[in-house]
Image (cartoon, rainbow, N blue to C red):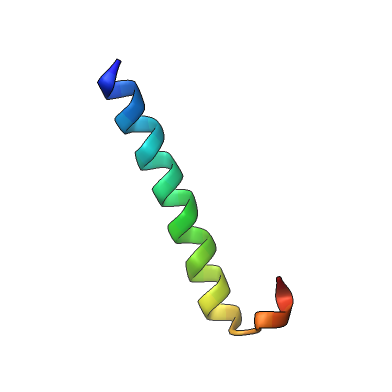
Length: 32
């Protein structure tokens, strides 16, 4: 059960990181 939670968390963090990277690369606060 804990493994599943850790897996979901890892996927969420990867998605978050990808979004942050795209945001930083775009560099436009207005794009939100």
